[in-house]
Image 1: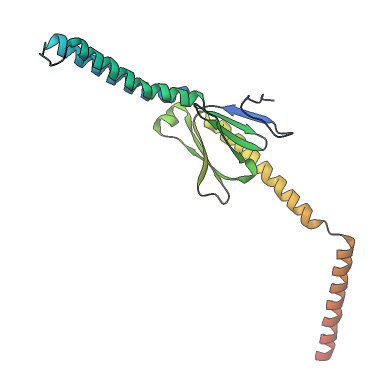
Image 2: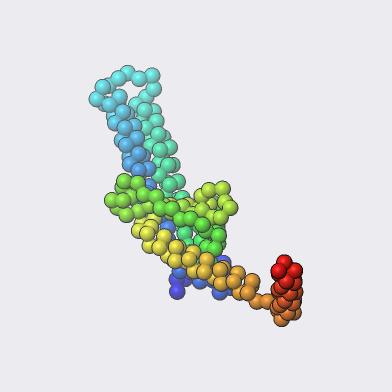
Length: 211
Protein backbone atom coordinates (compact mmCIF):
# COMPACT_ATOMS: atom_id res chain seq x y z
CA UNK A 1 0.00 0.00 0.00
CA UNK A 2 1.30 3.44 -1.00
CA UNK A 3 1.41 5.87 1.97
CA UNK A 4 -0.83 8.94 1.89
CA UNK A 5 0.92 12.35 1.76
CA UNK A 6 0.48 15.00 4.44
CA UNK A 7 -1.51 17.33 2.17
CA UNK A 8 -4.34 14.84 1.60
CA UNK A 9 -7.03 13.51 3.92
CA UNK A 10 -8.55 10.35 2.45
CA UNK A 11 -12.10 9.13 2.89
CA UNK A 12 -12.72 6.05 5.00
CA UNK A 13 -11.63 2.94 3.12
CA UNK A 14 -9.91 4.92 0.33
CA UNK A 15 -6.46 3.59 -0.59
CA UNK A 16 -3.60 5.21 -2.50
CA UNK A 17 -2.45 3.14 -5.48
CA UNK A 18 -0.08 5.59 -7.27
CA UNK A 19 1.71 8.87 -6.63
CA UNK A 20 3.75 11.03 -8.98
CA UNK A 21 5.00 14.50 -9.84
CA UNK A 22 6.11 16.47 -12.90
CA UNK A 23 9.66 15.76 -14.01
CA UNK A 24 12.10 18.39 -12.78
CA UNK A 25 13.84 18.39 -16.15
CA UNK A 26 10.93 20.44 -17.50
CA UNK A 27 12.62 23.61 -16.19
CA UNK A 28 15.76 23.07 -18.29
CA UNK A 29 14.49 25.49 -20.93
CA UNK A 30 13.93 28.15 -18.25
CA UNK A 31 17.44 27.63 -16.88
CA UNK A 32 18.94 27.73 -20.37
CA UNK A 33 17.14 30.99 -21.18
CA UNK A 34 18.35 32.50 -17.90
CA UNK A 35 21.94 31.46 -18.63
CA UNK A 36 21.87 32.91 -22.16
CA UNK A 37 20.46 36.29 -21.12
CA UNK A 38 22.81 36.51 -18.14
CA UNK A 39 25.87 35.76 -20.25
CA UNK A 40 24.69 38.29 -22.82
CA UNK A 41 24.32 40.97 -20.16
CA UNK A 42 27.81 40.39 -18.71
CA UNK A 43 29.33 40.10 -22.17
CA UNK A 44 27.80 43.44 -23.13
CA UNK A 45 29.03 45.05 -19.92
CA UNK A 46 32.53 43.66 -20.48
CA UNK A 47 32.59 44.82 -24.09
CA UNK A 48 31.41 48.33 -23.25
CA UNK A 49 33.74 48.88 -20.30
CA UNK A 50 36.86 46.98 -21.37
CA UNK A 51 37.07 45.86 -25.00
CA UNK A 52 35.45 48.80 -26.79
CA UNK A 53 36.31 51.29 -24.08
CA UNK A 54 33.26 53.36 -24.99
CA UNK A 55 32.80 56.66 -23.21
CA UNK A 56 29.48 56.22 -21.44
CA UNK A 57 27.41 58.85 -19.63
CA UNK A 58 27.45 56.59 -16.55
CA UNK A 59 30.38 55.07 -14.62
CA UNK A 60 31.59 51.59 -15.47
CA UNK A 61 30.39 50.38 -12.10
CA UNK A 62 26.86 51.41 -13.05
CA UNK A 63 27.13 49.37 -16.27
CA UNK A 64 28.11 46.28 -14.30
CA UNK A 65 25.37 47.07 -11.81
CA UNK A 66 22.81 47.05 -14.62
CA UNK A 67 24.16 43.68 -15.80
CA UNK A 68 23.84 42.24 -12.28
CA UNK A 69 20.31 43.65 -11.87
CA UNK A 70 19.28 42.21 -15.24
CA UNK A 71 20.64 38.80 -14.20
CA UNK A 72 18.71 38.86 -10.93
CA UNK A 73 15.51 39.74 -12.76
CA UNK A 74 16.05 36.91 -15.23
CA UNK A 75 16.59 34.48 -12.34
CA UNK A 76 12.97 34.92 -11.25
CA UNK A 77 11.67 32.75 -14.11
CA UNK A 78 13.67 29.54 -13.44
CA UNK A 79 13.25 29.90 -9.67
CA UNK A 80 9.48 30.24 -10.03
CA UNK A 81 9.37 27.30 -12.46
CA UNK A 82 11.32 25.21 -9.96
CA UNK A 83 8.98 26.10 -7.08
CA UNK A 84 5.88 25.37 -9.16
CA UNK A 85 7.26 22.00 -10.25
CA UNK A 86 8.39 20.86 -6.81
CA UNK A 87 5.07 21.92 -5.28
CA UNK A 88 2.93 19.96 -7.74
CA UNK A 89 1.90 16.41 -6.87
CA UNK A 90 -0.40 13.85 -8.46
CA UNK A 91 -2.13 11.01 -6.64
CA UNK A 92 -4.43 8.17 -7.66
CA UNK A 93 -6.57 6.20 -5.22
CA UNK A 94 -9.04 3.43 -5.84
CA UNK A 95 -11.78 6.09 -5.94
CA UNK A 96 -10.36 9.46 -7.02
CA UNK A 97 -7.62 11.33 -8.87
CA UNK A 98 -5.99 14.23 -7.00
CA UNK A 99 -3.80 17.11 -8.17
CA UNK A 100 -2.06 19.40 -5.69
CA UNK A 101 -0.61 22.72 -6.84
CA UNK A 102 0.40 26.02 -5.28
CA UNK A 103 3.59 27.65 -4.03
CA UNK A 104 2.27 30.02 -1.38
CA UNK A 105 -0.94 28.07 -0.69
CA UNK A 106 -2.13 24.56 -1.53
CA UNK A 107 -4.88 23.95 -4.07
CA UNK A 108 -6.15 20.38 -4.32
CA UNK A 109 -8.37 19.28 -7.22
CA UNK A 110 -10.23 15.97 -7.15
CA UNK A 111 -12.05 13.95 -9.82
CA UNK A 112 -13.95 10.77 -9.06
CA UNK A 113 -12.80 7.80 -11.13
CA UNK A 114 -16.42 6.91 -11.87
CA UNK A 115 -16.85 10.39 -13.44
CA UNK A 116 -13.93 10.10 -15.88
CA UNK A 117 -15.10 9.50 -19.44
CA UNK A 118 -11.90 9.88 -21.44
CA UNK A 119 -8.12 9.79 -20.89
CA UNK A 120 -5.89 11.34 -23.54
CA UNK A 121 -2.10 11.01 -23.68
CA UNK A 122 -0.15 13.83 -25.32
CA UNK A 123 3.52 13.52 -26.28
CA UNK A 124 5.62 15.84 -28.40
CA UNK A 125 8.69 14.74 -30.35
CA UNK A 126 11.00 14.80 -27.34
CA UNK A 127 8.31 13.14 -25.23
CA UNK A 128 8.32 10.17 -27.59
CA UNK A 129 12.13 10.04 -27.53
CA UNK A 130 12.56 10.35 -23.76
CA UNK A 131 9.21 8.78 -22.74
CA UNK A 132 7.39 11.58 -20.98
CA UNK A 133 4.03 13.19 -21.60
CA UNK A 134 0.81 14.69 -20.28
CA UNK A 135 -2.45 12.89 -19.49
CA UNK A 136 -5.68 14.85 -20.00
CA UNK A 137 -8.81 13.75 -18.11
CA UNK A 138 -12.33 14.55 -19.30
CA UNK A 139 -15.52 13.84 -17.38
CA UNK A 140 -19.04 13.03 -18.48
CA UNK A 141 -21.00 16.23 -18.91
CA UNK A 142 -17.90 18.37 -18.48
CA UNK A 143 -16.89 21.23 -20.72
CA UNK A 144 -13.68 19.60 -21.94
CA UNK A 145 -10.47 18.73 -20.11
CA UNK A 146 -11.11 18.76 -16.35
CA UNK A 147 -7.59 17.90 -15.19
CA UNK A 148 -4.14 17.77 -16.80
CA UNK A 149 -1.43 15.57 -15.30
CA UNK A 150 1.59 17.21 -16.87
CA UNK A 151 5.13 16.17 -17.75
CA UNK A 152 5.14 12.67 -16.30
CA UNK A 153 7.97 10.24 -16.79
CA UNK A 154 6.53 6.96 -18.13
CA UNK A 155 2.94 8.28 -18.40
CA UNK A 156 1.69 4.97 -19.81
CA UNK A 157 1.99 3.42 -16.35
CA UNK A 158 -0.54 5.85 -14.90
CA UNK A 159 -2.81 5.71 -17.94
CA UNK A 160 -2.96 1.91 -17.77
CA UNK A 161 -3.74 2.02 -14.05
CA UNK A 162 -6.39 4.69 -14.65
CA UNK A 163 -8.10 2.68 -17.37
CA UNK A 164 -8.17 -0.39 -15.14
CA UNK A 165 -9.75 1.58 -12.27
CA UNK A 166 -12.25 3.26 -14.62
CA UNK A 167 -13.32 -0.13 -15.99
CA UNK A 168 -13.74 -1.49 -12.47
CA UNK A 169 -15.81 1.53 -11.43
CA UNK A 170 -17.98 1.13 -14.53
CA UNK A 171 -18.57 -2.56 -13.77
CA UNK A 172 -19.55 -1.73 -10.18
CA UNK A 173 -21.98 0.92 -11.41
CA UNK A 174 -23.59 -1.49 -13.84
CA UNK A 175 -23.86 -4.22 -11.19
CA UNK A 176 -25.46 -1.86 -8.70
CA UNK A 177 -27.82 -0.54 -11.35
CA UNK A 178 -28.82 -4.05 -12.38
CA UNK A 179 -29.42 -5.11 -8.78
CA UNK A 180 -31.52 -2.06 -8.11
CA UNK A 181 -33.78 -2.64 -11.06
CA UNK A 182 -33.94 -6.41 -10.61
CA UNK A 183 -35.08 -6.51 -6.99
CA UNK A 184 -38.90 -6.34 -7.08
CA UNK A 185 -41.07 -6.87 -4.00
CA UNK A 186 -43.66 -9.73 -3.99
CA UNK A 187 -46.66 -7.36 -4.11
CA UNK A 188 -45.41 -5.81 -7.33
CA UNK A 189 -44.84 -9.26 -8.85
CA UNK A 190 -48.39 -10.32 -7.98
CA UNK A 191 -49.80 -7.15 -9.53
CA UNK A 192 -47.80 -7.71 -12.73
CA UNK A 193 -49.05 -11.31 -12.94
CA UNK A 194 -52.66 -10.16 -12.50
CA UNK A 195 -52.23 -7.55 -15.25
CA UNK A 196 -50.72 -10.14 -17.58
CA UNK A 197 -53.56 -12.57 -16.87
CA UNK A 198 -56.20 -9.92 -17.58
CA UNK A 199 -54.43 -8.93 -20.80
CA UNK A 200 -54.33 -12.52 -21.97
CA UNK A 201 -58.04 -13.03 -21.18
CA UNK A 202 -58.91 -9.85 -23.07
CA UNK A 203 -56.87 -11.01 -26.07
CA UNK A 204 -58.60 -14.41 -26.10
CA UNK A 205 -62.04 -12.75 -25.92
CA UNK A 206 -61.24 -10.52 -28.89
CA UNK A 207 -59.97 -13.49 -30.90
CA UNK A 208 -63.19 -15.45 -30.23
CA UNK A 209 -65.36 -12.55 -31.44
CA UNK A 210 -63.32 -12.24 -34.60
CA UNK A 211 -63.71 -15.92 -35.51
